[in-house]
View 1 (cartoon, rainbow, N blue to C red):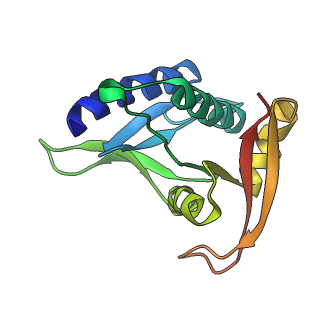
View 2 (cartoon, rainbow, N blue to C red):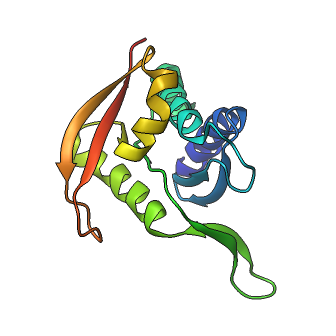
Length: 163
């Protein structure tokens, strides 16, 4: 049953991600590591990531999966420098991204549990995305929160669709 749900869930999300120029770097169970502007440069990467997150939430709210199931997902979006490339050994290489920005995005995703939210973003992502999407989403300030592995608090925003 679980595999059937994942095999229906993943293509639905990947279609939205692809449409906005995102690249799925890894599938990790029901989680995905998605990048915007790597490996293809995208000047609007933050806005495209926010739009993708909103569209995923809207699609999941309407979609009924096999076995009559509804599925929800949490999304963390962060903007920053990363190291990208192939990691592994000769016959087991995996293209991926590493760095503090990736870790913060993962922590933002986990913060959704505490905040009872679906999409959280960092201040840097908000500042790059807000001018394009502030007419269709609300950026609800959640405060400066301590995130594991960060010495300074991170300004966190919840993204809520106005539709």
